[in-house]
Image (cartoon, rainbow, N blue to C red):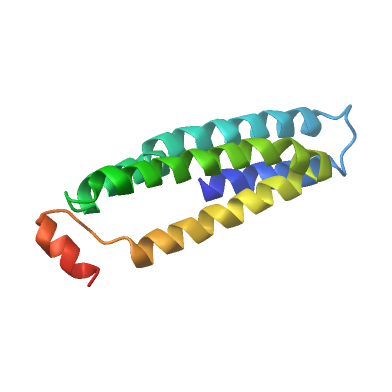
Length: 132
């Protein structure tokens, strides 16, 4: 996701310095669309499912309902926040918007690598022990 968003941000930055009549400008338009499409596919295959996987594998049974509701609320709130601010950010700077999204993806990948435990082959009790 971060690499595809980086490609999109670079293409938007380069478009500012190229004549709209040139062939490179048209190519950069296609590159930016392809980058967004790759990001959507990567999100669907990876990070998009992360909240639902974490809820099902990590939360103990006694709080799964309440914590799952809170996690779903947070997930949809941040989706709404991104949707709300995208047009404002694009009006400010198209390249800057996708640079911010790239930085958030890199931060998220680091966060997941450090703080989200591997659950493959572990029991719920072993996973809960990780958080104590």
